[in-house]
Length: 100
Image (cartoon, rainbow, N blue to C red; front, side, top):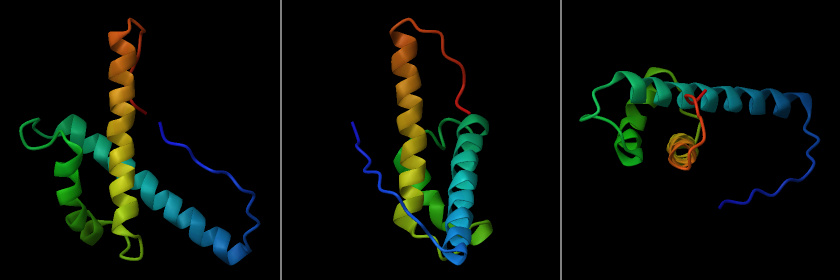
């Protein structure tokens, strides 16, 4: 289990704008990972590491180069962690839907 530390932050307007932009980029990367997982042939995709190899192409296509590649890798990993969590719940007999 991962633990996240939470501290109050009081950013300036300029910093808050940058934070929102970066959060939006990670949202797009998460949704694009989900799209590729659902719509690309399972032989070509389906693991975290295969998605990590695609990240340099993504950065050229739609992501700003200012975003750290390790952070984007973490976003892709988070998708697969969420997918594993849903499959575990399904195996335990719970009704689960799709990732959103």
